[in-house]
Length: 183
Image (cartoon, rainbow, N blue to C red; front, side, top):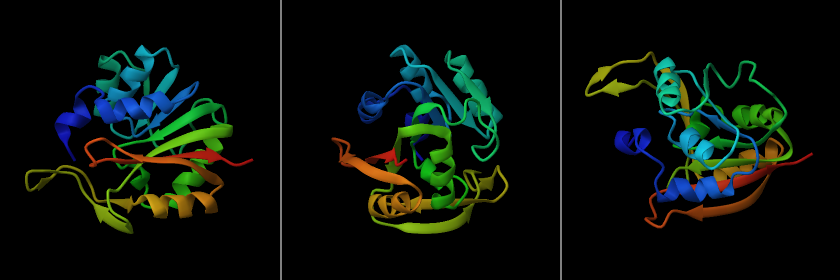
């Protein structure tokens, strides 16, 4: 992960994501809060959620609203969010993309949007990972998934989502897709 990008401000690729957001936005795995901050500045009602208390504090220090917790636990205003975000590879949360997509389907309103950053290559894998600083693990091992765009679309169809759009950042390094919740 590019920590400088993750903790910095919204970059050009992020702004392409932000332009596609509609209405009230839920940023799942908001991290340091760069997207929450940028969306709030654009006038969106936005909530970040993250399991890391440090991420929630960082988001709050940027002036954003965030809650500590899992997307699989109760989430404020379930079923009413217009847009949900899974950026920076957060389709991997929980290690089961289909389960995560089903959960997000419950969180957005009918016909709501989901914007996802996918892997740069076509992949659909599950593994157990830990966060490291250098060679030292600083987190327990947890399940994670890595999903390319074609795999996302396949999992999406099976979870109540229809593909709307796919694009690649100008640098060619970041890949994105928009899905719409089917009724």
